[in-house]
Length: 83
Image (cartoon, rainbow, N blue to C red):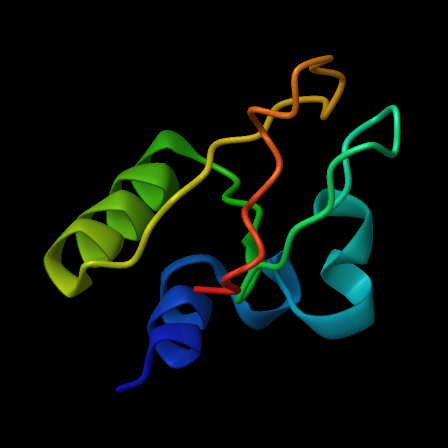
């Protein structure tokens, strides 16, 4: 199972955003930092958060937590690796 399939299995396909649907999460609020992400995952429960984190830890997939994307230092914006 590839990463996107595993994430979709954990939280449901409609909660895994890719491509244009993920773009607003790849730029900071001030539009100074831009990055790329394989996907944006929006879990709906603590169990789903745990499942996503467990998979990513086991698979070596980097995770960048993001809240309201209002940070002013760019720390919640992924780098440009897309990984």
